[in-house]
Length: 264
Ligand SMILES: Cc1cc2nc3c(=O)[nH]c(=O)nc-3n(C[C@H](O)[C@H](O)[C@H](O)COP(=O)(O)O)c2cc1C
Image (cartoon, rainbow, N blue to C red; front, top):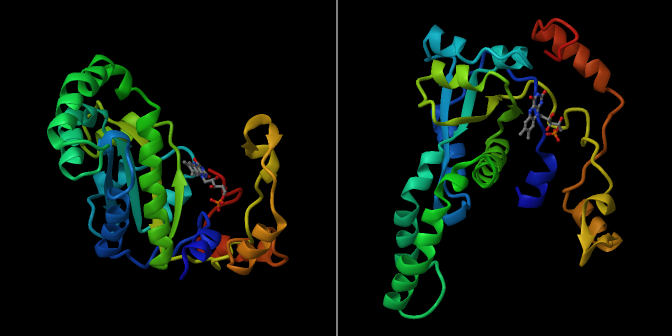
């Protein structure tokens, strides 16, 4: 499937088949996609623990207990706990040297570049190391990895849903993750129980209110020809709500034995 169609068909899938385990190889494919995502300075602070309900201990499964969207966590056959390890920033100079050796940085002779890196660039990063470990840039880059994993999951026929949790420290501790790490989110993974459209394409804010050209006050002009091309390529699909969605939700709720209102 073309990338445009994959992006267009991806949905947060909340209803998955609890009885069908997810193959570790498929989660591996998600992780492989996440691993090659871009990260500032090639620092690679994104980490994850995948918990498989069919092989994890009860204690490991219990560690996932979330106060919000808990029913999704309970029903999903696999849950990925994505977290950020800011200590990856400590190895920044190694990562930069690797980039240099790989020919990914700048121009000039290798010796010139190494000198500039060791004498200028790395001292600058060293002087703001603690700042670079704070929430912000690392989380953005982790998000890029999670987005690539999410698209890979879709391509593999899996449904996923990202879920935040206020119980980050508790979840990390329950899985033995070092306490200097930060929970990013839980991502439920399973074979979809709902139709891929999941009620239709979800509402988004108008394009022009989100993006500008040259200046904040100048909305980015949205070309109709581009919209038509992307519609043809299936980046855009039928907007939600599809007429049968409420019936589908009712059916799914009964099939999965979830108590209403199904938000918690
Ligand atoms: C980083 C992130 C965190 C999210 N956290 C939650 C959450 O805590 N609870 C929840 O019900 N949905 C959560 N979602 C799912 C969003 O609500 C979902 O993306 C939104 O409903 C739009 O649906 P779509 O992803 O199918 O476009 C999260 C999504 C992302 C990307």
